[in-house]
Length: 229
Ligand SMILES: C[S@@+](CC[C@H](N)C(=O)[O-])C[C@H]1O[C@@H](n2cnc3c(N)ncnc32)[C@H](O)[C@@H]1O
Figure (cartoon, rainbow, N blue to C red):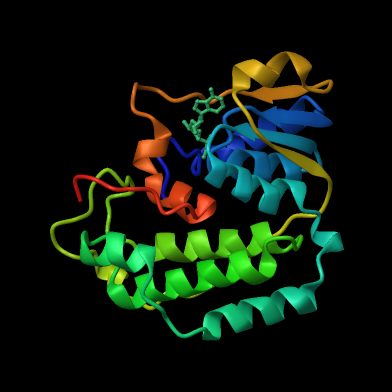
């Protein structure tokens, strides 16, 4: 997923450092995409991932708090197939992000609307909910028409925006972990014993919510009023 300050390139180095000090319990206090937390979990650590963004909480529920061993793979595959087959239906995303602006092609916006509605009505209480919603967020990210931040869309369509939205199965990880939707300052003193604490706060005054408002809206599904589109 495209994300400001994502440590996509650094994750291996960070993971090696954590392994070198034989960390058993790790905390990623500003987890964002959860990439670093994933690497630490992949290396066998028990990870707690914290962020104030609700989309980060969903990503962390999927990749960090979900133990791949406990997932019903058959049910997951069926759910992804069913959601993928849903016909598109014009809704909030289509109207706001495809017609009044150009973040997604309408064909993809309609499918995002249909899939997200279905997740709300049929999957809200399922342990698969964060996994399926992560699949939708990542699929939408692959067909958006931005530079990677959502303050603006591109004047000319990004070539990837013409592709069809495609849900993929997130690469789930084995083991236990925790996801917290919280302010780092509120939870840092109450965290469990930690061997490795990774701190990657924002670098400037721009709030992540405004740069990633579409992900916030897709997760909250609260159809906020819009302006300036
Ligand atoms: C530089 S990014 C982290 C990127 C992350 N390491 C990655 O690889 O994706 C900073 C993150 O801090 C989060 N954040 C901002 N203020 C916060 C706070 N007070 N407590 C916890 N998280 C916060 C933002 O939502 C954002 O995801």
